[in-house]
Length: 496
Image 1 (tube, rainbow, N blue to C red):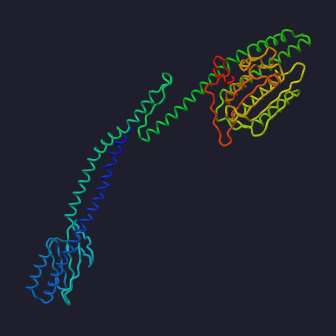
Image 2 (image 1 turned 135 degrees about the vertical axis):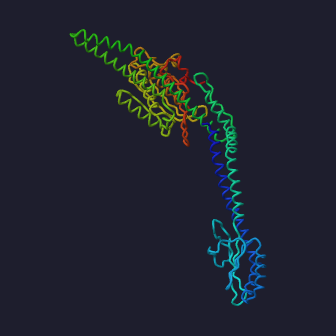
Image 3 (image 1 turned 90 degrees about the horizontal axis):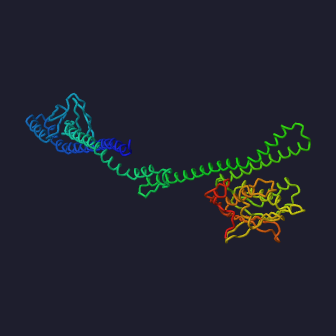
């Protein structure tokens, strides 16, 4: 049922009820006014009739029949249209409309009261009358309620007539007004119904109607559709990440899996393989297994970075995180020489697992690829506060003493599966670093090490404001599992 029809039905039912209630109150007020007028008329008539009644009682007490008859006629004339009844010591005189003689009458009162007789009601006023010593009586004056009841019945009929006429008229008027008021709502419904993300990129466009409910509903729909678009985009990114994960895994795992299958076939075919060859085959299997495991871990980390939400970000103390990463590297590689230079209070707004992954991969890359010929593996991790384009920043640098990175290779090293032939890694470590730098809006670049020796990987992060948290603006497109042609971010490039 349409809203205008519902409103019309409700108004059509409510308005007659209101008319009837108002009419009932009107009848009560009119009845009270008519009764007050009748009481006032009785009181005024009682003043003139009481004078004649006193003379009649005096004449009756002195036994003067002719004077008594004259006084009775004068009493009836003074009463006019009201009933009168005079009860004295020796006689009772009555005339005009009044209840039956058997009906009990009220005693002397200051205000009229109601008496009912033979289905009719009367207003009665009792007045004491004294015509002299031994000539006392009571005078009752009666006013029938017939006229008042007739007037009230007429008012009731008119109220009912108005209520019956008001129902259809009020319903029709309410339907017309509701239909006109609902036009903006229908236009909003039609505009929302025409939206189809499969055929058009148009979104809900609403012009203010100055109708609060309609404008609020439009804003709610726009907010809902915006959130829906965001979730749909995130779902599309999740599906793209899943497809990229599947494609990358199937492509990169094929070679180690085939190699492992070959080694397994050798072990199965040559049961009498000598110990040295068997040990070499098993070592190859372990190496390929480690490579597979590392590759899957890296792919999983890339997928997590592609799907992380802004709600996962918090204020991170980079000095504490750097100390943890350096300590973990020393545990995994006892021969590593890791030096950390930092100061407390270096905080950024970031995703803790992603930042830890960035530090771990930068340190591991410097340790594995920055080993100088014939020497140890010194690695320096530095953190300092500074400014970049006038904004407060945190500078993170990792230096090694290896052969360095040629300028023509400094962009390619961040692409997926880019590694040296002798590298034991998966080729995804620096891709993870580039992903996290892009995720945190950091500027990432590769420089020469101190004195031109080795390499320095530097990331410049925006510092976290001390007075208020900042909701990060994540990259609009994230698919680091895809190839460079399908990933047009380029955040790892040095900004001009």
